[in-house]
Image: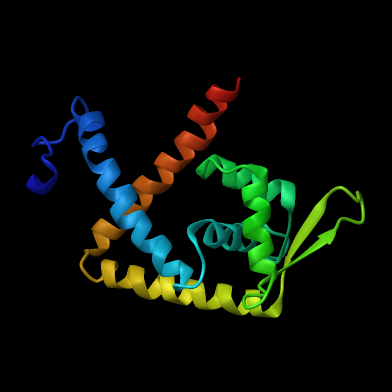
Length: 170
């Protein structure tokens, strides 16, 4: 714990400061390594996130409205609508051909983004690669550390998404 200059013992009173000391190393070192691994060296980080959003939030993991992609990606990155369009266009064109961009049957102004078979294959490879990478991390953790870490990350995400983010918007 000394590598990150954490206070010892960690208590409720010093938890926030210790969390901040870990945040940037975790976010940028771990987060970027996972993101880079998921990209397969083929996609940029925005394209990687778009593919993940289609998989995780899309109907059947295959179809998602463009406006939903924009709403979700803007939460993570400060991207303009044209930048999102550019990333989507690159994902749809050769050599990738991972998605289709079609007009919505409900509105000609709305676009619907769908995975092609190549895109679905890439997602499966992306997940397998991500699991392999994360298993290399998990191999160095005890079962208790794994459980506690997942419990902590899940709970922090839940608190931020349901309690703190909703307060910012109200």
